[in-house]
Amino acid sequence: MSKIKSPQSIQARISITFSVRAVECESFSFTDYAEKNTNSIPFDGYSFDNRFQIGLRPQEEIIDFFLLIDFFEGIEKHRGQLLAKMHTKTSLKIHNYNEVTKSAPNGQILIPDTLIQMGNSFALNHARGMFAMKVQGTKYSNAIIPLLDPSLLLPPRNQ
Image 1 (cartoon, rainbow, N blue to C red):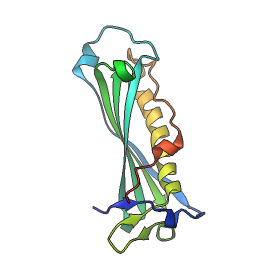
Image 2: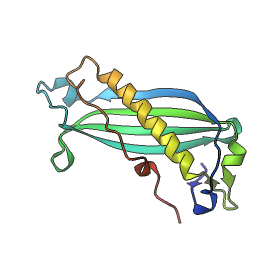
Image 3: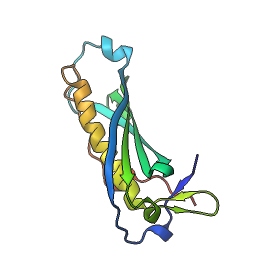
Image 4: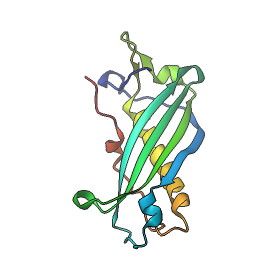
């Protein structure tokens, strides 16, 4: 698997031409606790852990943006039980893939922050809609995946 890095050297202004190739809910499941729970939870009584991952398919010029979400009752320091897990994938066909990505001598694939941020934003917004559909008609239908500051959607820098 290729390592992904987004160094300052490729952060110059770049035009990215892309199309959404696929949006998938790879899995969604309520926990046993969630299925058996009879207590209602106020809409501000939920929390989410979001983990982003990126996969590359260079031969197809596709970048996959994966989002792994854990849905909990309770917030922050008072977090309670895990209620559900959801895994999504948003695939972008990058029409100018070879202009946008660069290969480093050490085998890493260099991707501009702009593309990572944009792809993760799409993945998050697609997941928000998928989640709403999955909890529709359940006692958790008042839960909404919150919007995030796009700057938080960047991976930590590898130095």
